[in-house]
Image (cartoon, rainbow over all chains, first blue to last red; front, side, top):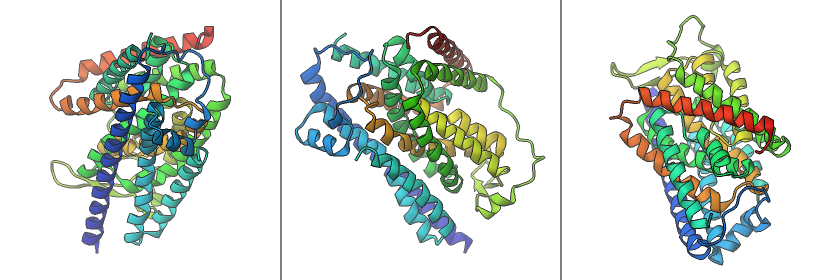
Length: 127
Length: 278
């Protein structure tokens, strides 16, 4: 029984490793594409972050970010990439729920669901 | 300064921070916020937002490698993430309320503490604590690969570790850092988990912890794409480079220099926090 559990553990860890790598790579590519558009259009603008204004509302919410990305706004696409990056560990936790369920480790399914709920609650702020 | 020059300089700075952070094992996140706030005169809230995002990138990138090596313990990680994510939510809400000079001072203290930890010699694990029965009930006991085959370990004081992790999460959410120093402290000192396992599991947890405060930050407009872009890409590239050369480099003296830089940045943050101008 021990052997099969360990094997499943390893398989779950392999998938998690690939998931994290893919998420980071994808988000870096999206951020990079947004950066190219942003820099071409705004390279001569002054850069000033001395005073905090907060971002405009469209860059604070998932809906607005998607809208700006479809319109090919550089800043919107970068923000979409950052959103994908934030989603990567969340996807990792979501997959872990599945992984622990496969192993019939219900205690850890419970723990992982708690973590997932906390993460979704936080992300819910920006929906 | 125009956007192109600013992006290039911030990108270069973040690249060096990520590179040195990975090379010395101290993480690039701790120097990013002071770098942005003190050198580039960025408002500390924007700096924290950008730093938090880069923390997710480096943690996930590194964790991908560690998970496959079989050092990190996903059960310990997941259980403790309940504490760190709750703490991170609290920290993110605190960040909205606490005045920025106070954040700068807390940040400075955190930097001094990190510098102290890295300058101190590594402690040998003492075996006088009894294995915690709670750890066994929570199925946290594990093995890790070593030169003489797999070695087993049983975590000690789980409750103490859990409480420390809540604190680590709060700091992470308040300051936009990974707070790996506190996480390793919780797992090393309180739970007596072997060093290799605690550092890799801590790295594994940092991304999830940061993601818990990122939603709140995004919603409150702390995450600026123009700033976060060079920071995230720079730190990510730097830390990947750093892990590549890590095997060959002699890091002892570099570590000392880097912790000195961290200590100086800490003092500067505290000073700026007290006299104002941050």
